[in-house]
Amino acid sequence: MNQGRGQYDFYIGLVLAISSSLFIGGSFILKKKGLLRLARKGSTRAGQGGHAYLKEGLWWSGLLSMGAGEVANFAAYAFAPATLVTPLGALSVLVSAILSSYFLSEKLNLHGKIGCLLSILGSTVMVIHAPQEEELETLNEMARKLVDPGFVVFATGVVIVSLMLIFVVGPRHGQTNILVYITICSVIGALSVSCVKGLGIAIKELIAGKPVLSHPLSWVLLLSLIVCVSTQINYLNRALDIFNTSLVTPIYYVFFTTSVLTCSAILFKEWQHMSVDDLIGTFSGFLTIIVGIFLLHAFKDVNFTLSNLPVSFRKDDHVANGSVSSNVYERFNHDEENQTQSELPSVEHFSLRRNGSLTTF
View 1 (cartoon, rainbow, N blue to C red):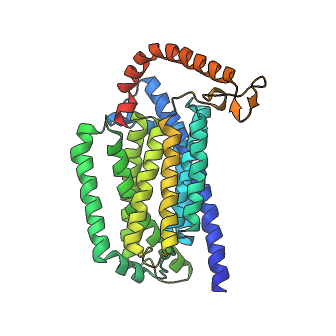
View 2 (view 1 turned 60 degrees about the horizontal axis):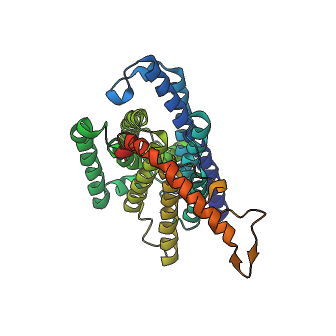
View 3 (view 1 turned 45 degrees about the vertical axis):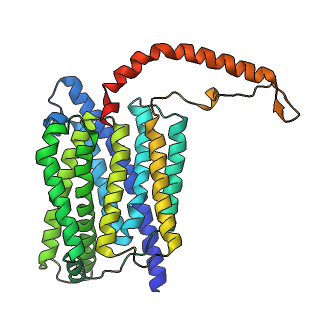
């Protein structure tokens, strides 16, 4: 009975995690379009500390979509381990990339399509080899986990790093370095996931009729979650306003996932009982996702499709005795010369891009 119930919870968590990725991936597009609309109106940009986006309906639509995604994500953490739910966040990157190509004119080329496929494969591998989460039934058990010396050191380090980035590094380099605001969102996100996990336990106890509301930890977790999520929304908006969505989304995913997996390993000790095969599979899956995301966005400005591969075999090209006919290579050499001549004027283009968002990456 317990095994059947556990499998049932697994599939509920899986469906909720996928739904969350769809909502969150769409929210990036809606919020970005709202911020772009405000920029055209001449309003103070969010990256400069402005809050005019609070009056923009499209931005609120994106926020509501993200809220729906976070609610689904919240519920998913209550039913499934963080090491299952978090890697599936890669799907939000794919949704964001695909929608960006349609609504933000950010083209998805062959590299991007291969990156999408690799991200899906990597997520699948991580799910298959995900470690088993330690079962926590009560808030008292969660409280003992939270006061564990390892987690206390980790949480203290996260708070110190976040405060330094917010008050020291952010004002100086936040407008030019894409990693500043994204790092703030990511490291704080690790704490917010811990709060979500604890509140999920509290909700289960509340449904079971236990006096959860009188437990101090419930209110501490709720207050901490509000502070963490508010901070994440603020600095994620700044990053989206300053930098390209196709850069913000994948970097945020990699940093956030790494922070959550680290926090989960320290708090729930998920990695202690894993076999060598599962360890290799988990890390391989995560690296595959990173490679996929890199391909998805690093070459987004390159117009590369199947039709312009270096050598294309046409109907009049023949292969004899295991070697390609010489006219293929003559055509290929001729195409290379033409391509070299056509690329010479593009030096100015690349020099302009160096002064744009690419230098911030």
